[in-house]
Image (cartoon, rainbow, N blue to C red; front, side, top):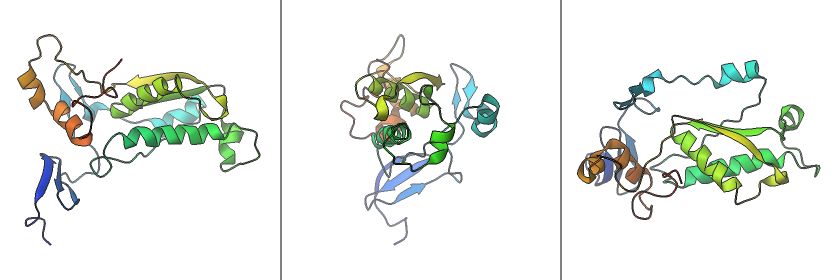
Length: 195
């Protein structure tokens, strides 16, 4: 059936459209997030370069990058759960139980110096994972030594300062959050607020 004849369930224009049959149409040519600009900080997503593969050998660190499942096909909080599972998987290699699935983690990793981090939404996830490690135990009793949060994506339940409720609900970041996490209680969720 042609997408023109399908019934639209929700959309976040000009980026994505979700149909009632579950089909997702990404309206951008790129698989990456379209360039965005924050007028308050003058930071543009075009200005951000990921240097993971360049910096890790120079810094003599081992980095594990997580390709978590994306909304709207997999709405939040699944990305948080994917990252938690990935961290648990990495930490499971510290145990001396004889199970070795990735020897390079054991041979090159230092489980006494585990850091987590991310950029934008990834920084938000890293923050929430760090908070979770204060409540739940990681495999092998591993402790997170620290976290880096590069331009983290946070939001608040209530308007801040001169921010009006009407303008706030029209803001792209607010609409995006409601789109990727439609089941969040009360719209903005604790995952998005820096508590």
